[in-house]
Image (cartoon, rainbow, N blue to C red):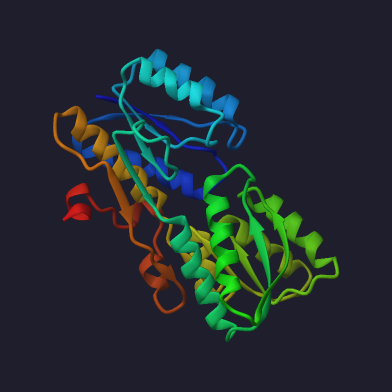
Length: 294
């Protein structure tokens, strides 16, 4: 049994975890996994080319998250034309494309982590938002939820924003530029953790402090939370999502029924509970499909 696993980039630790999740889920079944990852982060042309490379390998199933909501549709259509089932994770595809999808509510987790930040600020503060790529559905939904949460608090003002492209160094550079400008910032809502770490880099370089939250619960964020440098993160568990999509693919190929949709609950991680996440990805608990759907 051969599975082609598609993640978006090599730069985001969450996708390294997703790849590990596929391998951990496939191992008990003896299934083979091959990873297909654009070397240019989130590049639709590269992902489309990789789809055709994977088709030549003749996998039994695709475990797939698209890098763009529309610009890889032709490649997805080629998979379907070949009669190979697709199992989605992280980002939804058009209805009917995926046999199963495993994900989490970006809106809910972003809203919850924003409310954690605003409670810490006691409902008053000047906020910067650090966005991911403009075309990223996850970033769009998280930023919209950040903005909606801010509107619920009259004392919270979004004073500035920048884009870090879901990467550490671009986020550091973009936020450093903001710190050199006129906007005043008490706290930061980052659409993912690796950008939050870039924000912390920029703050440390100029001796400034701000309350920072992110999304993903990557090990670097857990370390920063435990050290008191970062306030909180939301556990967007890409490793678990990809593992579940992989297990669904294997069970479907074995003729078993699998759920069409799996939504993981939101968990907020701060200093009170961070020890639960203070593990490398290969040691973090990974639930099986039976445990998640029980």
